[in-house]
Length: 452
Image (cartoon, rainbow, N blue to C red):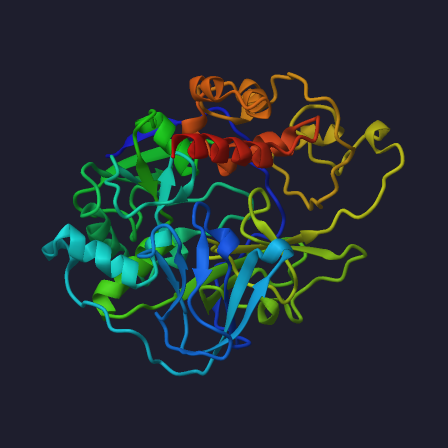
């Protein structure tokens, strides 16, 4: 029986439009994108020109500092475009699929029987090294490092979150093979974090040589940062790696098939979706076929988010899925002004506090939009942040230390333990409308720059 950690602080935001457990295979547009902004800590350069022929696994982008870290094409076809933004910032490389099954050849075999350098080389060649995220700083891991431990959260506690047991139901073997490969990369343990009641999971249970822990409580109990904090906190000078379950499966699949396979299961959810469910796609797929004819009628336009409503990236209707995202959330855009909204009873307004009468219905599901319900105000100490952050740190003081760029104080206040997703709820409930995640990222980048 795994150890159980009870998380008491946090907040569950129940949104309407949870994906039903049914799987569909849509007819995709044939366009797939690799988006450099997804990969924090990498300075990428383009290896191919528009029109170049590629197969699945062909390197498309490489890191300038660590050229062995590459991002590869998920399909065979040709490079459609290389898109840049202001100051020539690289935004995306789009590949058009030819429908061919051609792919690069990799090693086929049991990773448990391979040496660590061989396993590492396989993951690098498959273009899956960016799946590994380093703590501290929340950046792509460095191949030269050996992490103290590797942590995998097998559940997502965020709003509209996908069910990884359902997503990986047919991928038990590939997940187990992926765990074998990861065990070769660390000198410590591979930790699996399970939700309460997930201990007998058909996908995640009975895997040898892993450390199991159950986490019981509200969001952010499913965040790996919270799990690391309660099991083995990251201290200055230490490195741990994290990875999501579906990316573990992709790594395992390379050893089973002897080639890269970027098939991906995606949850489409949210109150603006008529039939929220799961779709079988490929990484980087264009989302327009999933949305066509599947949006509810509403006076408000849809906000389409690749990822969760707390930490995801806004995309257009013809945008592309992010590399790490197993969810596309679609909620109403909050493009309106509500006169005296703060003075109304608020039966249909979500609030963490008891400001509105809606607090009488704590188990209710909400149809929330993106309206800020007010403007930015003075950044004051309210004690609200501590109620939703189940870590022994002082979030307001940490953010203020970041704003004044006091690196010593940042270290004392625990900046090595958090990334944006861990403090996303602080931004949601903030009465000052402070951009908590943006501030935290600037602090993480500053400390990393000073340490390099």
